[in-house]
Amino acid sequence: MKDFPIRFVLTDEAITPSAGLALVGYLLHRTKLDKRVNALRLPTVRRDVHISHSDVIRSMIGLLATGKTDFDHIEAYRHDHIFSTSMGIQHVPSSPTLRQRLVVS
Image 1: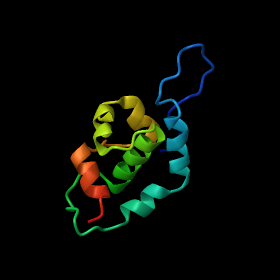
Image 2: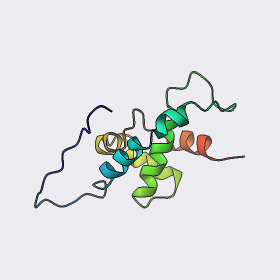
Image 3: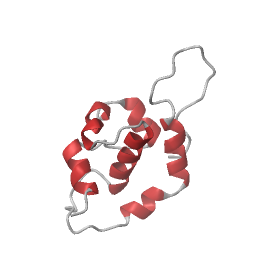
Image 4: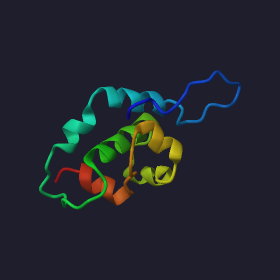
């Protein structure tokens, strides 16, 4: 993420529940979380998966930031361009993927 892709503009329009995600995504970018998380090799995850560890982590953090705690709530955001752009997510995972990658057995 070279430049922050979202501009903040003063407006009279209603604020959507995803409005604060831009700040959350930017702060995550500043932590260098992606590089550290993607370097992990988990034995339960195939090497040919197209959803990175950072996309999974960012998706769950995005859910938590919007007050959602259930894995199934990610389905409402799978095709939400504002959610994925704000959080810096390439591929929003499905709820089964999110559950499988985050639940420790």
